[in-house]
Image (cartoon, rainbow, N blue to C red; front, side, top):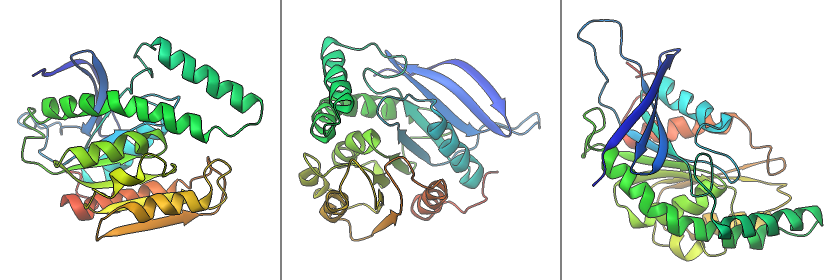
Length: 260
């Protein structure tokens, strides 16, 4: 089993940001910064894993912004790793081929959904065991521990990877998903019974609302909530992240505002 190797750290506005690697997997861990008291240290708190979107990386603005909300709002630890072929990860020949096909379809004005679904399923096959190895390593840290609650937060490609991850790993006890097609995910979603919050855009130009609703409907969770916002694919309101903070506070056992 690989352990977490921290490679850099910075502190800003009460948030400690630490770059790390687990084997060859690069990631970042955001945590509440210790106070200035000599005996202070990192606080034991729940962990939220976040999956980034396609074409972005672990420190994309959406990731750092959501992490800030989760750390400030509830004092969570928040971890993101680069998906295969993204961020600091090298691309394979298969990655390059699929990206080229996707770009050609976009340029020609053709639907990209079937390509994205296929490629993201391939990425999930690679990423799920990487996430599990990362979680194994993070749970060795005293501020996280092996018995603490774990959530998952991922939209777009983060959902494509997160749904099979949540279905495979019982350590994840609550999840936020959204903005993806049901193809290849609906059957897996039927095995998920943990609380789920799901977001879709009512006027999504890529994912028909019927498709988004079908994926939401597939989850077997007794507690699941749908948020449907007006707007296109990239117009998900920022306040949706605040809803996710409240969701994780409720299901991971923290109180909003308990960052210290």
